[in-house]
Image (cartoon, one colour):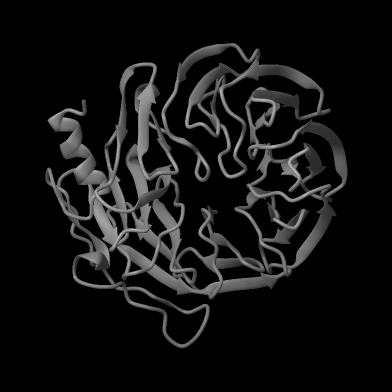
Length: 382
């Protein structure tokens, strides 16, 4: 049974109503955030409107807008809401800017030192990180996933079965490469090679494809059992790790695509639920049945495992301190677990958790959708 302390913590972090010292931050405390004025690409920016308190804060989107998956680094947090707004908050929950572009997808944006790059229903758009001004808006008539950054390029897979590289300076398409089937999750990269997974609608065949990041030239292609293939991740040891339809995690050599290891897990993969690199030696594999397996990155040996009664469809796990993990389940709950912490399944009072990220200061960033009022919550739930 969840303890009173745990209940207070989740109310502080995942509820709209403040508890245990949390108060609303940003424009959510007194109404909707300022909207962009004067057309697409403009952004509004108040001077400072945060009200930090205790160890956490909450930012509220104007009802009934849903908030998409978050992206965060050690400085700021980015997310989309309402299919048309891209927001950047600082570490204390202050609204840096709110940019407008109709058709923004609810997948996580990508943060670079100079820009926030966001997927759209028909391409990609980049906004200047300092003030939210639109840098470029590229239309390719395909549904684009969260990109990876490789040098001067933002490289993304698409639902229509393509890998496309956008020049970060002007948004021009540098190259594009066809896949054998649709790719519903983000790619991964080691900086020089981009790897993408695909899974045909008939669920019979799928695979992984690696291309040169600079040119799009195919380096290798490997078939994988279809019926549920996760987006990949790339480990420091030089492998691409994914979960496939044969209920197993697969590690493929980034240099050649050769299999390194295969480890059975309880469920198939989900396209928008990639594994998570924990450190140089470990990778955390998430599967469709809402479980996590901590594997040795070099051998695939399982060192820890947790199961749940949920399902995982969108959003991968987030890494906390001292071996703690948070994992969003499709019914709205969050699985908190780890080799050195008690396992807890916690639910926000309303709505569903749309995504998690590790934010500034190592705090947990949680975004909520399908509630009467949707929020971004930041706090130490680990």
